[in-house]
Length: 169
Ligand code: PNS
Image 1 (cartoon, rainbow, N blue to C red):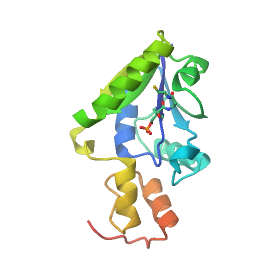
Image 2 (image 1 turned 90 degrees about the horizontal axis):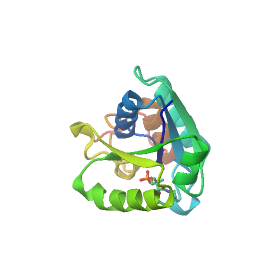
Image 3 (image 1 turned 135 degrees about the vertical axis):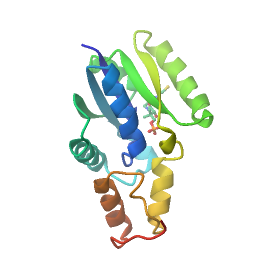
Image 4 (image 1 turned 180 degrees about the vertical axis):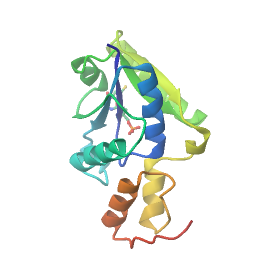
């Protein structure tokens, strides 16, 4: 059984993340989405909320099976080992992602040589999609429905006190 962890902040999960997740499920028997408990980053959503949003997004997605959602603090490689994973999945959007991801992958390999990082490329339509950009757009009333699942768009609007009919798009 090939298990991978897909770690991230997922604040909130986007169509870009789901695209990577779907590709990962084609390669691995089980993919564990691992939500980092990161108080230092002051996330918009609590860990529990981020987990619930992922669960809801996955449930309404037609092609996502064999997925678990977990939370972790500490090192990704430790969580990978605890989960019985031999791989860490990360998405790449543009060259700008590469340097940081390359550094993390090499450090993770140094820490846990038996855990391999697998980079998957997102669909072209998601190249500019990031949780932080989407939060900013939503915060100022822009329309985010093309970038995140409906549950996430609604949850963001609630957080920011935005009316349902957000404009900008
Ligand atoms: O969604 P993000 O914020 O890009 O995810 C970053 C994440 C969670 C993959 C990274 O910050 C991470 O692995 N954090 C856990 C701590 C850790 O293992 N640090 C060493 C990485 S070399």
